[in-house]
Length: 250
Image 1 (spheres, rainbow, N blue to C red):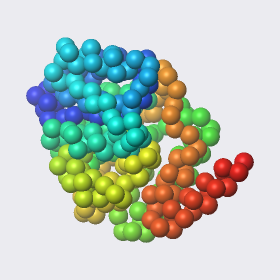
Image 2 (tube, rainbow, N blue to C red):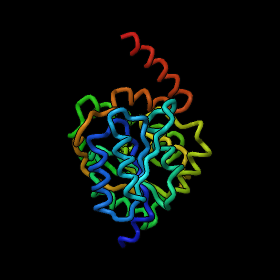
Image 3 (cartoon, rainbow, N blue to C red):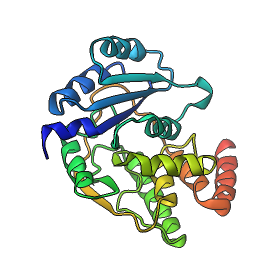
């Protein structure tokens, strides 16, 4: 892999109130991968994230921020729009809080340049997660894996991963054709992509160690299971409605 290959990639960073992290993340990415494109998809942050990004944008043509429609908030919706707006051959979606180590992106890039249609960052250690979030993540993983098997699609050992990449045109086409079937307000766009991509697509995984947040607070909660249920067809949506009704009474 040559340094000139970096310009073939866009890193998509969905953000909401990441002022403590975004400048350091941008600096780290450009330091490791000169020429890479960074696309921030911001859900109307109120902590100065937008202002910080606009200052970076003034001085770096490879950095862009897109402040999204406040009526369309959500991690999945942000990533969907980022992939569609990406102008490079490949994209990688990652968090901006350093739980996804920037150094691992090189391995994801190498997999894509070697012929993979999609590459997934698989967490080798979830110790940085709280007990509740770890249990929610594991339960959601089993549920999603079962559903993908049921519909005859490829799965992954970490369907709940927020670190993944792919061929931009392939994934853009899936999003545009299946947009109404994505759980836009959900947290796990990877699950939706795996539901709809060509079952013959080459999908590989890269193992990495999941880290602690560098700053700010996590936006993910136990509602991830209900969100994943909504992504599991008509039956799943029904179960999600029941679960949501039960939880709302507590």
